[in-house]
Amino acid sequence: MIEIRWHGRGGQGAVTSVELLAVSAIAAGKYAQGFPSFGPERRGAPVAAFTRIDDKKINKRSGIYKPDVVLVLDASLIGLINVTDGLKPGGKLIVNTHKTTAEIRKELNFSGTVATVDGTGIARKEMGVPIANTTMIGALLKVTGIMDLDAMKDAVEHRFGRIAQKNLAAMKRAYDEIQIEN
Amino acid sequence: MGKRVGLEVTVAVAEAVALCRIDMAGGYPITPQSHIAEHLSNLVADGVLDAEFVTVESEHSAMSAVIGASATGARSYTATASQGLLLMNELLPIASAMRLPICMAIANRAVSGPLNILNDHSDIMPQRDTGWITLFAENGQEAVDLSIQAFKIAEHKDVMLPVCVNIDGFQLTHMVEPVEMPTQEEVDKFLPPFAPHATLHPAKPVTMGAFAMSDYFAEIMKAKDEAIKNSKKVILEVWDEWGKMFGRNYKAVESYRAQDAEILMLTMGSMGETAQVAIDELRDKGIKAGLVKLRLWRPFPFEEIRAALKNAKKLIVTDRACSFGGPGGPVFSEIKSALYAGDHHPAIYNFIYGLGGRDVPVQDFTGMFEKVIADTDNKAKDTYEFWGVRE
Image 1 (tube, each protein chain N blue to C red):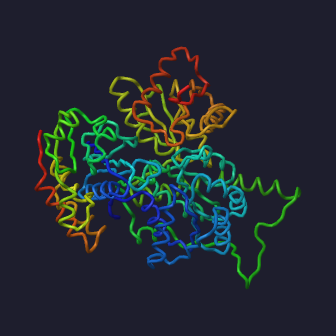
Image 2 (image 1 turned 90 degrees about the vertical axis):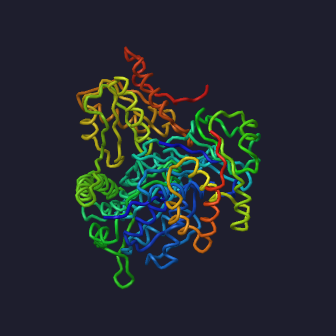
Image 3 (image 1 turned 135 degrees about the horizontal axis):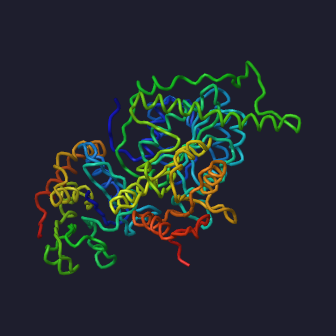
């Protein structure tokens, strides 16, 4: 089982992303859970959201405390909250930032896999908005290899209708452009 | 066969209720229930569901509207949680006394105060004696299945009672997870149209929910008790039929690795699956641990509980609410009373946990087992403890 924690700010779409990812994983025949950090949420305030994916039925319904993967949608959260809290030493940290993997590794003193991509820049170019939640799904799929990019197509089309293709294009670019340092 | 899809559980429940071709839904928004009513209202607005969606100014009005609609012979539904359920409380015994087959989802949430929006069972427990058939779902699939079964149970001519399906707030309601949605054809085959024995109609006036003083009141109360006790036979029949049709079997009491277990834990609702993970871990260490899950809270399955617990030396009953100043948790109290009449009396312990959304990870469940195992001479039996509370 792979456990993923997403960090973002209210309104950036972390919850939408965990939902899209879970729906797509289930459609691909896997088992998955997608859930928000329970409780009230405010636009702009730090939020977390979670995904569990497995090939067999998932029975655990408690919170995720030791994720295999942490994805940071908003790099301004680094230093504000401890984004690597509980992240397994051999885990994977994915950050939406224009910084290099070496810079992020140094900043967070994390020894596992570090991956960076300018998701916001990609989202701006491909969709005209600085919202990188779907873009970063591409980064996540590249780093984790959970599923092919194609597996996201139906869920994204169902959710976004006529702007789906732009979301898928942004996702593909993040998939292609992410820098990964093990 | 239905399609296996990833859905938020509230949306799946609303879709399931729509498959039941309800005639009317009344709802007032309250977290974590709101998505059920929102989605039903969308389905009505989009023309997918041919029903009247009545928006009201409070849950008291929601239940009143649903009672009125059900009395006219409409298949009627509502959903609520926490304070909303408490506000409905006054109407709940009326719905059951009038023998109206209303179905309701309760997205279980802690009752104020202090204000809290997260999950526990303090909203449903005070409704225990209102005469509603009360079911608990453990996962999204069960929430869907029970929501459909509820109408068949409620509307059966030998039952004619309201049914509530308890779905733990957030832990279940806000989870996107795999569910197999039955098709419309399958639900139509399983659930015939509602055929009420009497209806309110201007052309044919009848009196419903009339006045009764000491001359008749007790008889009506006894009739309600008999009706809900008799409903168990129908509930089991409906589950049997469901199992044959969909391959998913339901029992009043479920067991997991309990056959040869010396120490059993009992859960109700969404905690059961996480507890299963703990049981597996304990079994790997050679501890004979097992799990018993209670799905049917009213009518209470006394015989099934006694049968499920007959080999246990020690029993841990878990509760998501407290009967303050009473015997501990309400489930604990019920299980003790069920065992009193039998001849097997395990050492029984009560942990009250997961209050107001407090997370209960696997190691908390194993911790409860370890604590009870360490009590070798059963000194702590018959006590209750607020698990993990800072003092």
